[in-house]
Length: 321
Image (cartoon, rainbow, N blue to C red; front, side, top):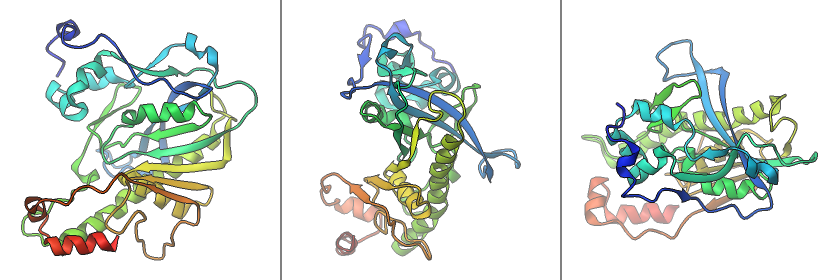
């Protein structure tokens, strides 16, 4: 469904343009998108049985200062395709009350589309990012731009099948599917122990899929023979970074792939801690950082009841972490 009201109908309610914070580093920032298919993995959620895992990856990188003359990158790539496929209610549900600004182009991102990479023969460290469950990578734009402006290449993987909509350059829009997501709410008749066992079981395929995406993106960047990034990535300095479930996926990728030299998890604590417990899997040998905010206040009795856990058991689980 298309939007029923023209953009001009909201102009009197919203500022005409909002600029994200300008990156503080010495480099300008370029952004480029890649539509990549991993021929080694089946797409378990596709409608066609012979489909393979397809990813939309956006990469922020250090660019030449004269990139300011180039085309500014829109905040949400391929927004027009998503707008054509989702109703206003769906757009607001996925992007919140600012969705009109996002889809009207009223938010300036601060990067430049396909800008020339910073000059010389310098090789830049690579950070591969996995987002929180269902969170589009553009939600992290300010952080990516800041990091890229200081001389890093940040490759962020859209959570296809998990977020409300992921658009590809040919106009296809892939919607979320329930089977690709996980729920931590008890199901009817489910005990607390059954909930925990199910959550651990559901995490395994999700983390394997996400960590496989991280490793595939590294391989794809190695194989680039053309474009801004070809020959400019320092593959001796690769980091895996993720938020929430993406942080646990980054940890899993570090368990599996020693070419990744460091791992950063932002709020990636799970039921078993920040690193998933896999049979036969050791803790990552690479440097590992877990970032988390202040501990939230204790849950109310009503919240504990919704998860079918006593306050005593909740405290035991918290202490065990």
